[in-house]
Length: 102
Image (cartoon, rainbow, N blue to C red; front, side):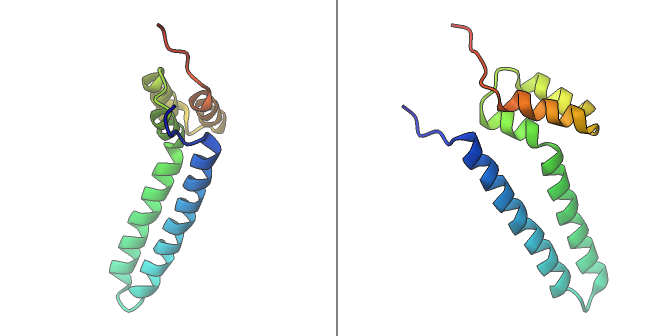
């Protein structure tokens, strides 16, 4: 028996991590209030990184689950993730247990 984390714990970890990242974004913005160019640049980079990780969440979940169809999930996520339906399908597929051939 391995010490694998359940999917719900991973999702909670992702949400908590996302809240921390958003908090850091606002902290960066406030720290560089005297120099708006640097603050806005760092804030923009942090926000883009946050939304990129949110967009790729199905691929991240599939990778952490060591899903057999990781490549297909990644392609679906990359090409159709911008449609909400494509993103949801990729997330559900990534969350499902994969059957390995023996």
